Image 1 (cartoon, rainbow, N blue to C red):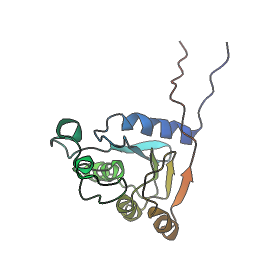
Image 2: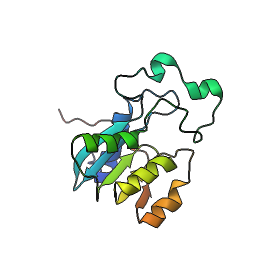
Image 3: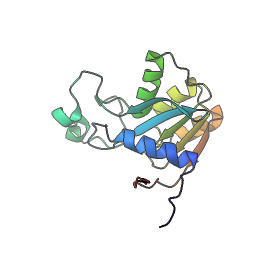
Image 4: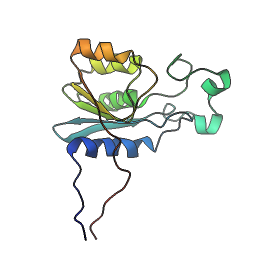
Length: 160
């Protein structure tokens, strides 16, 4: 029997971000994010309605109903983005994200990018692309390293 391949650290955390995304309640995109520093998970987040509020799975998607294209008019959405939830969870638990890497299933919208710059992250790693490319120049100006990788395998390898 072949010995399983151990994923690299970036693939490992991207795979975790993909699992986090399974909790998303958005009809358009399931997005997951994981904040990591020194190979330790600090916080996670996925896109969905504010805690305790009805979500799109229950109410339907207002953006779809109004015909709003992906990547535009972010304010017309009841959801909070995965990256925003990573930052909020850090604040709630008194965890600094300074110097961390964010692993996410999609590139950020420009609003999330602004927040990530102010949270002082140093690196953003993703395998997916969101329909808002305005973040690239901002990350470059702020010195945030952006890395796009291949989508991690969805297979979980067990040694029984």
